[in-house]
Image: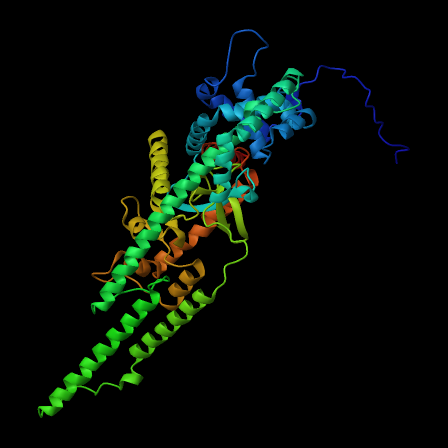
Length: 529
């Protein structure tokens, strides 16, 4: 047994020159990231860099890109944290080769290369295809809400913007912006930006308050116009339903809420009563003429099931109208339309855990969990994203097939949940698809309790045909792969990007492309080792 411990000699100098290649094992992700970046066409990133002139030489774009990609692979998005890790983490030190860039340089590179990250994602996807990954036989599309770099408490209504417009007109806000600009200039003169103590003023964006207010006000006006148009369309549709019901024509679907709900419910009851009375009158006329009526006699009016149901609808409409008349307005009502003054492009998004200020990120994933396409929009509803995402996946598959010629790089089936279900999405041209008509549990229950087989019935509508197909053994089995395909990939992607770092929908889309590229690089590396 040893008599002591190993000596700890922190003041021992290296006996041989150190070699960074010995600091990490050969299968470490850093070496793979460096190999991938060397294979890429970085001309788009180089176009954003300045060369020549006075001053110190700039950092190699490949080095900064590799640093950013590896940082996102590790789930690190803060430029300050990346700079700190370059001092303390061996992997980051290898990436920058000991020449550590400050956080302002990293932030400038990410902001200046905004348009280049989409090309980075495409190039990485082609590398995955050449490596035998990205099997496009089955594609699953889903959306997830990602918070923006803005607080939900920074939303303002029309009254607040009217007040700010008055202040801007009188120069109060402009004066504050001038004070901010002078303070930033003084800080830069004192060496704050030069020595890396603060983010550049263009990125800090303190003096852009008035501009952001104007953008938010424009966004609010656009929302109000859109809501007004939707409200007018709903009123016209409700009026058309009421007129059809009063004219005796059948109206399908549930009576919509609104000021015309009670009137339509009463018109529906009157039509049912009139139709039933007509049946009773025809039977009485036949009996009076000495003829024997065919079939069983009609039930009394008070016992007819359709009339009972119509009266229940009228009672519910009367209760709703009374409640609406007695409802007191809250002491401080929130505006229906708001805009965020920190990130005017972001929206309030509903989630299972409440509301967040952010964007709707759309992801298309292959059967082997490679991300084939991504996008960001401001609509909480997924329905309008199906065709664009399917088109993007088709284009990616075509590019991969052209590069490899493999039959695995051809789309066979597209899967999507009920959030994407609409007649236009079911009928849109493109690959074969399965779109759920209800929640996953209800879909599985319907396939279990009411199984079917064979082709849909003749004359079935698109929805009826889809419902029939989802209840077949083959359709239920194929759709069951949707959750196992896309949801784990979204969960892993959100470990890389759980919140956007920059503001604006263009910056958010750029950052999502960078995060998706990092995700695919991790998938390729895992498959390679």
